[in-house]
Amino acid sequence: MSPSAERPRRIRRSPEQAEQEILDAAEAFLQDHDFRELTVDALMRGTGMRRSGFYNYFADRNELTLRLIEPIAEEMMEAARPWLDDEGDPRATLAAGLEQVVAIYARHGRLLRAVHEASYHDQGIERFYRELLIDNFVEAVARRLRRERRAGRTGITRPDDIARALLTLNVNVMFERLGRTPSDPPRAVAQTLRFVWERTVYGPPDEAAAAPGRRTAVSATAR
Image (cartoon, rainbow, N blue to C red; front, side, top):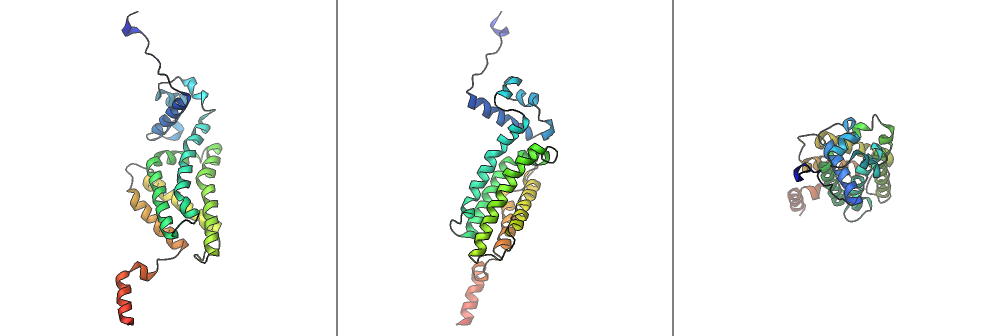
């Protein structure tokens, strides 16, 4: 057999590398396809590995999906942590957290949108999608709202309901504006969400702080 007719040599990968290659291929596939089109055959064709290799790392497509969104959910929670844990100025940490969360959605918007749509048709995906990307955040935001009420910084009396409404708003706005191609500028999306969250939780900014020129004029008049 001539060298040109020999089989191509298989690429040697560590288990970690092989698993990550499958995850990367799945996210790349979902950039251009609906979730229902994600089959093991279609996925593994994008890796150069055998179809059977999929089952060395994932029991099924649902486990693959869970592994895809777990690190994204963790990254978003860490982005929101300063505000959730009351570190620093609340308005500033809220704004920074929203901006970072929006940036994460901008990087993974097509994937998250595909999983979100799949959750309406698959109970397994719906269960962990809701837990990781909705319920965990609702609980964390509601805890922060209760602390803000005790501190006298908000008048919210139904923190669980308000937290769920705000998170539902986030999901819908970001999927609509970042989960499609072309998408909107992430900074503009973050500014929209900041406006709603800040006024819902804290009310409009202090007039004097929001309008320095007017403050000066008022002060001069008072003198």
